[in-house]
Image 1: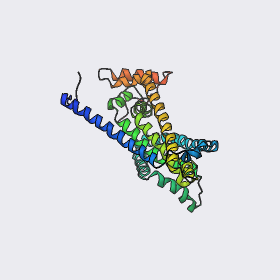
Image 2: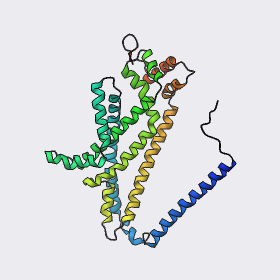
Image 3: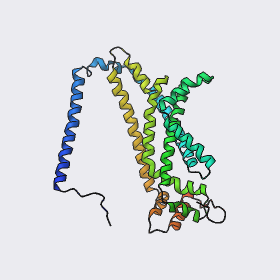
Image 4: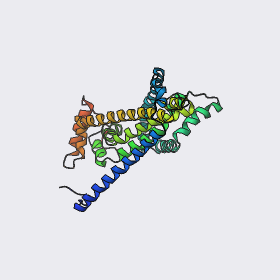
Length: 308
């Protein structure tokens, strides 16, 4: 049975939608054409404006600063994911002495802008005798903010799962840690993967804020190039912006590849079958857990089903 959540458009609606689509495309093309015209009239396409990019040394320095950007992003992304998992599990704890402090830390880090965190770490800590390298100020600020956001993403993904998933896991003898590790987290990560990747893209772009605290990343070098003879401001923005676009597209491609792999994974497919109301939850989850563990070892708890 197929349910339709909206009215199927009729001939008039289809014609109206086509007209709106054509008008939208024409407006976008007109805006882009106007911008290209203004760039041409103002001489932004002249060879003298791009002269600085004909030097090999400039591209070498772009490569060095690109490596610095990727170094900050890579460590910040890993630490953000780790912190996100820790905070998400802490927020789901049954113990108030764990849940309340973790919730307070998560909300605090989410409320403070990344730039403010960087400035506090780089400019604020020296006032109490702690000097921090710009690299670590960027990484730790990105970790704190994005980790707290990812914690909320993972928590929402876990709580969106059917309650029967957890209950069936307890029914086959799993402890709470086993239910979380083998049943809930794999499904939550798979469901929330697009949101997680989107937040990692934000993490990559936020590394550009490091130029304010003198971290030598791509935007920092673009600012240096803009101070050269001829002031190639727009040209530097085009080159550096293009590099960021390519990096984000690569990250999105990796995420798409991982999503396809998880869809084809027999382990996650067995777990996902538990969503089928016609399937027997306990037998389906038993098969999924056995495949997830490989060796078939089970994290059995004590007698009975733990209270929810």
